[in-house]
Image (cartoon, rainbow, N blue to C red; front, side, top):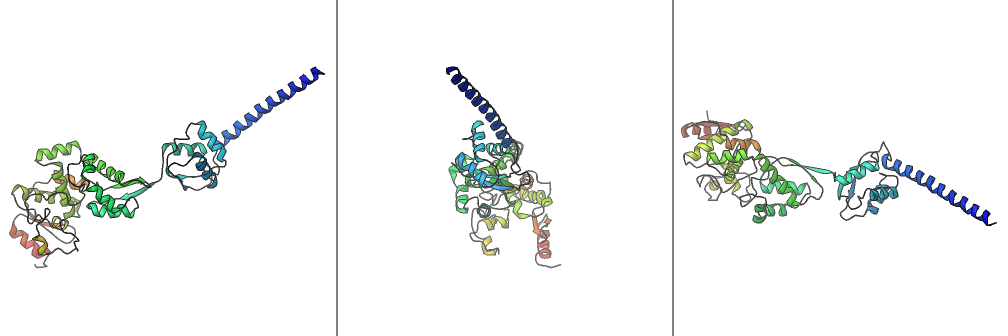
Length: 340
């Protein structure tokens, strides 16, 4: 009798072991299949957000709700097995059920978030860039302009100036959603630093200018012409004037110093005394009047050799250059006043 009971217990135990082994093997096969195989190979992409501080349970549930994965429990188990529970990064992700859970977890761990594009055109000033940044929903224009005039923040970026005008390099940038204002500005300034190389710094020093001087001059060149090929020639005029101790007499510098400029420059504006009015002051203005691109910076450092001291707009984005005031007056009469 005792032997029969022992036999029954042994059979039951053996059966349980077999059941556990087979069941465990089947479970392993099932979760392995889940990890490697996409839930829906034909699914389209969608934006999937992970909020700061969101738990693995909520993330897995949201993935299941959005039909990106088939099993939230398996995803949680796999994530914990990879010791990745606390490594999931917040942000917006572009996901699809055509990706396997293994690929999805890898995207989370690498922080491959959706990026938003913003293009800063050459020649924009701080206020114009601030409006564009606000329009693209990165940060409020007041915060942007405030940081661009914050001396401690400017110093932390290694810029020797009282504002960041001129150092917000114009280009196309890509940022994750909710990127803070400091990060946006820092990225633009760091890009400027990669453009204005040590060779350019050395070139400026050889010419007798500081980096700030060259950025200032480049910003004027940027605002004076819409023709990239003219920039070195425009640069030569300003360099020639500086050498002769002549005033630069650049309209864009006057405009920069006018608050609420209405687009119509008048004689009274030319007589206003501001740190930027180059009709009233000799040398360069107080600082940059815009954020110049690489070609204007290069032109400021490499003016062509010429004897030109004047230029006037032909009203077609190009200019007529003159060596004497008599030639210049004739050009003004022809191109601005319509006299032959």
